[in-house]
Image (cartoon, helix red, strand yellow):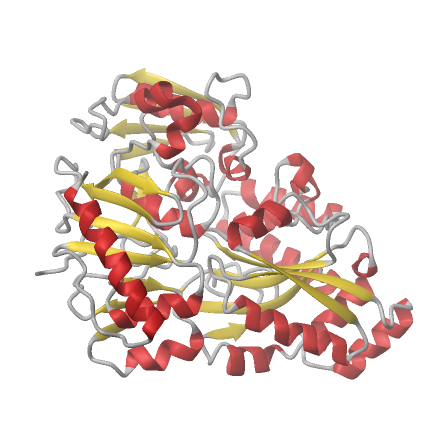
Length: 523
């Protein structure tokens, strides 16, 4: 057995006992090994199969893309590509690839590997096609990927596509080993191989994912020997593990515990604003929320200021629409959040004949950026019931929750919690508000909202190469969506994390990725 695994098994046991006794006797995690407390089990370690930030936090350390985000920004810089050129009409991107890079399995990184990665996403008849993968829409404009020579790749697009480079830096654009996919087939997600700073060692379900330092990493070997990702779904248990020394890093600190860690010199608390939206999907196809007035009523009925100040302890701001203010150039500042106005909510419900309507509300126990979801869901339930609605909550574990909500709410529920962290103002509305993004077409529009004008604005915005024009199109889209309220707009979160004081060079990114290549934990 890998000697690291033995050590981690002992730490899991020791920390678990300490947490159970609430004694907080500090355990010792292995020297130079970083133990990260994740909010859930990963769904997959194949970047072309997942869409949750919880999974991205592992994947971004195992794989690289052609480009990546500069530290602390959402600006693109070279990674596996050293440079690139764009044709005058914006439909051809040619990348020069980095020489001498190998995958963790020893196979070479080259143009053939890049072509393989993108063809498995966009060609339905590809022998290793990724299947229905919502984030493949990031590259839906790509008509062909060509190996010009061994270290040069050309992408041809069917039209100009402004977010293309940013999308390449997102996990959907991470490059996997062609040899490993061919060897493992459908089991590749449990036998991943990339070119990243850490290589896969083990995934023990519901216990840990272990990755070791990749000594031949093209950007310099990481200081850490290894990283262990532990899924700890219950927030209180994660806090107890952090206090007891069972983990070195905890992401998404519960609001009630932020001050505990901020005031303790044994820990370091980190915060970073980013493009985040926490909202409720409303079923616009059937049931009470098929009437726009009922959707608007829900937005008036919920006291979002109280949620932000009391439940979230000031770790977020009230959301005013579908676009996070972090995208300042595309954000519609003329939109104010729906005010808390229960009387107006009751008026709208009366107009719609929806007084006393029964609602089924899906809530998750915890998930990526979900902002204390049980407490939030309970508070929202109380506000909706105060205006005369009859709300029943059904609560699910995160991955189970996604498996129910992502295929659509039709015939299941009237509303569901959701959170997104994105790289572009294009991503969330294009994937979750367009008519063609209904679940049966591979998107995340689980509430079945449809407006042809919104569809057209989003299409124009993603194909325009003029940022000022794109900004106006996005702002117009936001105004329409705000009025029609297919979602209950709740909050924009300031992400956070806590580490033990001996963890060095740790930082949070606007992308919400957990980048650990430079992190150190001296003995």
